[in-house]
Amino acid sequence: MLLQNAFTDALSESDWAFALAECIHIGGFAIGVGSIALVDLQMLNLGMRHQTAARILRYTELWTVTGLIFVVFSGMVLFSSMPGVYLVNQVFPIKMYVLVAALIYNFTLHRKVAVMDNPPPLLSKAAAIVSLLLWVSIIFGGIFTGFLE
Amino acid sequence: MHIAQSLESIGFLSRFSESVLAYPIVLSIHVTDIALFGGMILMTNLRLLGLTFKGVSITQMVTTLRPWKRLGGTVQICTGLLLATSEATKYAPNPFFWAKMIILGLIGVHAMVFRPIVYNQTEQLDRSPVIPGKVQVAAILSLVLWTAMFTMGRLIAYWS
Image 1 (cartoon, rainbow over the protein chains, first blue to last red):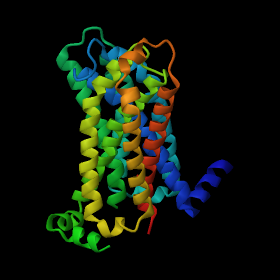
Image 2 (image 1 turned 30 degrees about the vertical axis):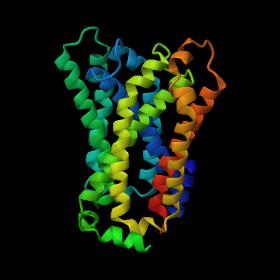
Image 3 (image 1 turned 90 degrees about the vertical axis):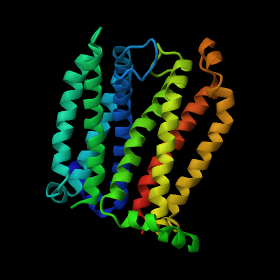
C-alpha cells in the first residue's frame, strides 16, 4: 500500500516517472506482441520453412509471457497515476475489454490451434488473423486513449 | 526553422496535422510497427545470443525475417516522415527528436559495420561451436540502440 502510494505520488509529480513507465510499456508490448506475431506469421504460412507454429510457440512462449507481464504492470502504474482520467475516457474501457479478450484468447483457443499437429489450414489462418486483429486494435486503442478524451 | 515552416505549410501536410483522426491513425501504425518489426529484431538478436530459437539456424532466422524487417522499416520511415514533417515546427527545436535521429544514424553505422562480418556470415556462424564475441557485441548493441530509439521517440512528447 505504501509502495503503491509512493508510486502514485512520484508519477503525478514527475513526468519522468510516467515517461519511464510508458517506455517499459512500449518495450513490453514489443516483446509480447512481437513474439505472438511470429507465431501468427507461421500459422499464416508466411514464416520459416520446415518449422511448425508449435515449435515457434515453444521458442517464444517465455518471452511472450515476460513481455505481457511488463506491459500489464507498467500499464497499471500508468493507470494508477490518474485513474479518473482513464475511466471516463471514450477509448480506454474498450481497450481493456479487448485486452482481456485477447489475453484469454491467446492462452486458450490460439494456443490450442498453434500446437495442433495438422490443423486445417483455414482454422490455422483464421486463428492467426483474429490474434493479429486483437493485438493491433489494442495498440491503436492505447494511442487513441491519448488523443480522444 | 524556416525550412520547418515551409514544410508544414505544404498543403497535404497541414491538412494532415489538422485532421482529428489522421495523425493518431498514422501514429498508431508507427507504434504497431514497433511491435511487429521490433519483435523480429529482438528475436533475431536473442537467437544470435543463443537465448532462444536454438533449434532454428541463424541463417534461417536472418533470411526469413529479413524481407519482413525491410517492410517494417519502410513503413516506419514513411509514417515517421509524415508525423515529423506535418508538425515540423514542433519537431525542429525538440532535442529528443534530434537525439532520435542521431540514434537512427548510429543504427545505420551498426548495419554497415556488422552486416558484412555478422549478418551476412550466418552460415559460418551456424557451423561455429561457440558464439563469437563480435556476434554478442552486434546483438547487444542492436538491442541497446533500438531501445534508445523508441525511448527517445516517446520522450519527444514530453518536450515543450
